[in-house]
Image (cartoon, rainbow, N blue to C red):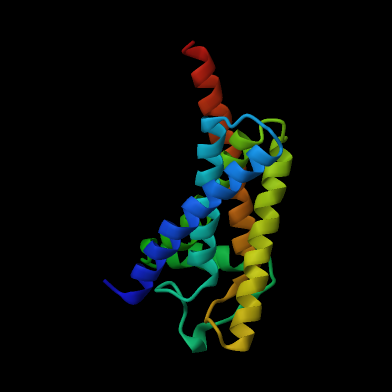
Length: 182
């Protein structure tokens, strides 16, 4: 095993129990009842956002070479480039970039909409947009400082926001099916 994999495993083995302990202390302090289902979904959301930040902000095997770091502020430019690459025989690149950016944020929309049932879907999508924008800004800042080699792209924000919206839709379908089986 590589040292980064071992670090990641240790990180989560320490972080999740710490998170659950802090949630327990907060509930005990405020004298609130703890709902296991809610706590499990919150723990999944917590783990998901940590994995998301690990995959997108920290250096890993998805980092670009130093000479390939770029900033794209033109909407739909890299999406168009990826579709052009698809027509020229690079379907894996298209799937990895376009579908990967969408699928990466589906759990966020799902978990947010499920956890905070009073939250409207628009707020869950806005949260996806804000988190994606924050990630892209961090990637740009860290790339400029030489800490990581990541490209910042407005199209990633568009695709990630679409993924959060799809997560909300998936949860609505899940909830309706669950209600119909009762």
